[in-house]
Each structure stands twice: as structure tokens, then as C-alpha cells.
Length: 69
View (cartoon, rainbow, N blue to C red):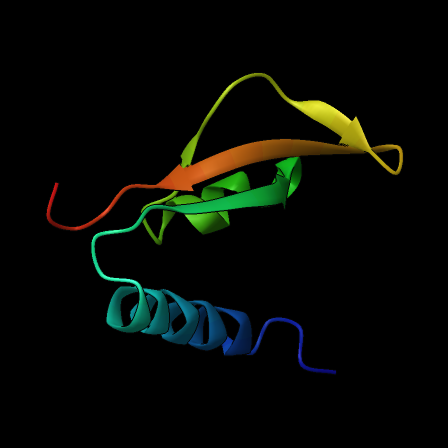
């Protein structure tokens, strides 16, 4: 029921904010489903390496570099 409401963006923005608050200057690394790479890119994550399969679903490792690097 909540798909398409923008809640995912709100949650992701809060997660990134808290990472910056509690782990300042540290990068964030995620394993994203490949079809969501553009979504995570909106929060500063960039693809790292080649796509791979996890549980038979294409994934992409992504990295968000520290704000002050």
C-alpha cells in the first residue's frame, strides 16, 4: 500500500543523515538491487565494480563517499 508514496525517499534521506551524524567522514557501502541503482544514486551512491547475482537477483555494490573528503 505504501509503494509510490515517497516514504522510501524519506527513510533513505533519514538513514543518510544519521550515517553522517553518527559516522562523520565515513563512506557508506550498500548492496543494491540493480534496478534500484538510480534511486540510490539520488542519495549520492555510485556504482562500484560489476553487477553480480545475489539470490538470483541482479545486484550492484554502491558507495557513498564522505561529504568532507
